[in-house]
Image 1 (cartoon, rainbow, N blue to C red):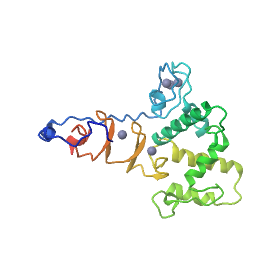
Image 2 (tube, protein in one colour):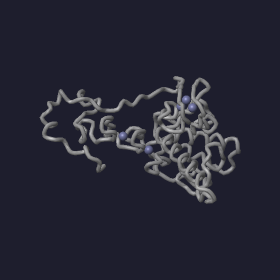
Image 3 (cartoon, protein in one colour):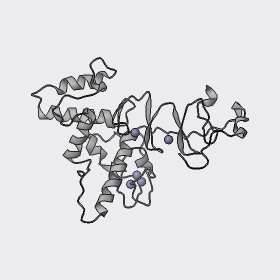
Image 4 (cartoon, helix red, strand yellow):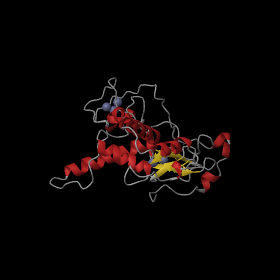
Length: 250
Ligand SMILES: [Zn+2]
Ligand SMILES: [Zn+2]
Ligand SMILES: [Zn+2]
Ligand SMILES: [Zn+2]
Ligand SMILES: [Zn+2]
């Protein structure tokens, strides 16, 4: 925030007529899950510089990547569905966990106090389930507005009611866990679980900016010139005076 160049509009810029303002909003390409993504990374595919990773997907056999350790490769078994991709917020979270893990590994002799993160382990699944349910133990009643019976989310409310059934079969329980994980963590255009906020977010008014690595109000847009989000689709970027892609249509 304090880096030079992020000043309020200079007098120069305020003289620029509205019609002349340049669009500097970064394009957010939504790639549907039908499209097969491929990359040609020379490095590990572990960061958002990898096209597949950036889109919340693991690498596929069609990728020409060398030494691939894309942490999202585990998603198809995690979601039990090959066509699901991680929501932008979940993908950022996974990247952060992977970074932490490799850091703690490199500190020799020091045992990691945090439980190992592994998308394919039952422990990680259970942890994520509890996080989504807002509880310490998944046998508890889920907490939070998203599970409210007269709330906005009928699907999760119905989920919570069924979760309360005591003698559920293990098969049905597994299905229900798959359901809530896909609902809260996959990129499906609906409400999602925001790790940035530690709560569920409505897709309509929140989105996770992959460049900033943070969940933002929908009125924020990402200025590619300043490489940060800026508030107000009808307001010029405070850094460079550029405008959002919808500015000229408003
Ligand atoms: Zn890659
Ligand atoms: Zn790839
Ligand atoms: Zn790869
Ligand atoms: Zn987020
Ligand atoms: Zn941003």
